[in-house]
Picture 1 (cartoon, one colour):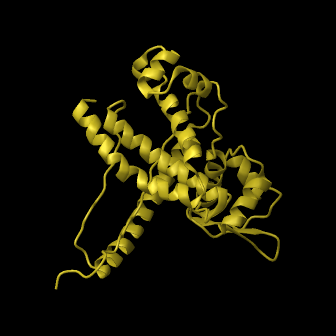
Picture 2 (cartoon, rainbow, N blue to C red):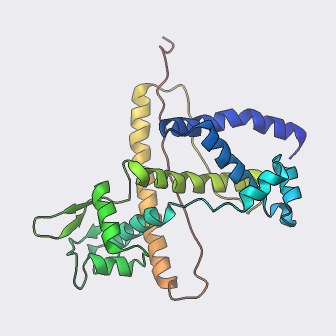
Length: 266
């Protein structure tokens, strides 16, 4: 990156970091904790840069951290990853909606007993989720994605895993935003084949315009996600027995409608 581009990127950092800082403040993250996380992330990013040997001196040069700090961070325990439970919930919901005998037809899930053939525990095994059935069920009930029926069966009432708060929401935030950032950074740095990353951006819209666009975008995005989800599920089921089926695919969608401040032109 040239000096001019480095300076421009530094200017853009404020714009990029403000939304993340809002989440940090909302969750009581202080500057000391944030600084430690940034240091750890810089060291992780610098390791293997340009395919060269990962010496403490080289990482120190790339990050500006002293070698003692680099050594400490490289030997620190790896941060915990909350992806497992988030992915488990999404995989179970997808399998429940798309795979027989757990659905009547595609998109029409059956009510399931907890135990027995074709029950919830069978669903967990069929979805190849490495999380205990009781843990997944508890999580889905807490999220409101599944309802417990009077006869003891369980009904899927959500088309996707959408944690509404707590640790689950934080894990989902990290998984989705992390994937989008990985794709965007790969495009910016040119370190990987270009990822598809597009956005439609319009300004000078009324509140009524925003309402129409948001409603339409939600419908279109949900439909696209469900189509790709069905295709991905079918491909994974066909490829699961094959060796080397270890790739990961992420497709996301977001809609941001921001009302203008103050009065518009008359």
